[in-house]
Amino acid sequence: MKFLVVGLGSMGKRRIRNLQYLGENDIIGFDSKKDRIQESEKKYKIKAFDDINEALKEKPDALVISTPPDHHIEYELLAAKNNLHFFCEAGVLTNHVNELVAMCKKRKIVAAPSATFRFNESIRTIKKLVDDGKIGTVSTLTYHMGQYLPDWHPWESISEFYVGQRLTSATREMVPFEMEWITWIFGDVKTISCLKAKTSDLPVDIDDVYQIIFAFENGVLGHLLVEVISRTPTRMLRVVGDKGTIEWDWIKDVVRLYDIRNNRWVEFKEKKGFKEKGYVAKENMYIEEMRNFINAIKGKEQYVYSLEDDLRILTLLDSSEKSSDEHIHITLKGGRKK
Image 1 (tube, helix red, strand yellow):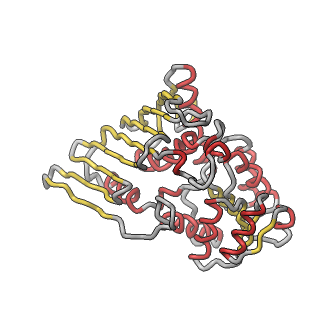
Image 2: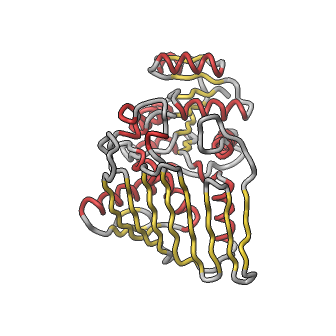
Image 3: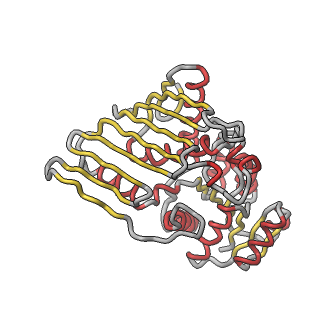
């Protein structure tokens, strides 16, 4: 197959590496910035364009959309109108998604919103432990994700990077990114409440902290803290059940299980994997995500996360912000507002 990578920034280059790692070497690229085109052509030996229509003349089979989130729908609709399968990075906006869903169903297009953490080894371990009842009935969970915003892309100013813009801010982006896998493990959210604010002197107009409390339809209570002011990156989860506890430390690559039946902690250490220089996250889960997308195109398996799933999760972001702005609790049904 031929893949057109749309957007040759940090994630676009990562997706080129993912595809090449999987043996997919028929890759072309598109970006409006000449320096990114030149870097990608030199580093990855691909042909790249500054005109999307010229790139489409190369007749790709699928698009990998790695632009800033406010441009996602533009290229998703372009792919669908050209009968092309597409993968798209995690988004924050719901505009035109229903139109896109209808078009993809009619044309039998594989539409693959990013769900990276479903391919993370520790997240899969946690899901299996919960599903297997290793900690009994789950009562509550608390999760903290944080990383200092200027460290995300130290080579560019946050004021020029989409994560520093209010509509596409890093905190807005990470709320649905994290809620996607949390709801995968623990189920749909019934009610949600949020406080968000700008609490730091970061030189951008964004809310840098989101504190979210939610109740799942199964009765589990949860807390999510997303912030971009931690000087050391963190992802830490604690899940409490009536027969044990699960803890996850992303930086240490370890899940810990305390089972009262054995009265001891058991550790599940991730395989070593590998990281690209300058990156915090290992490449493995991104590669497996691309593998699932490719296999879905080939009809070998189903992609794990649909546009409808994504719309439901993005509704949680909208409801969180409405809760904070209007100082109210939001009640949902199946992830959608009543």
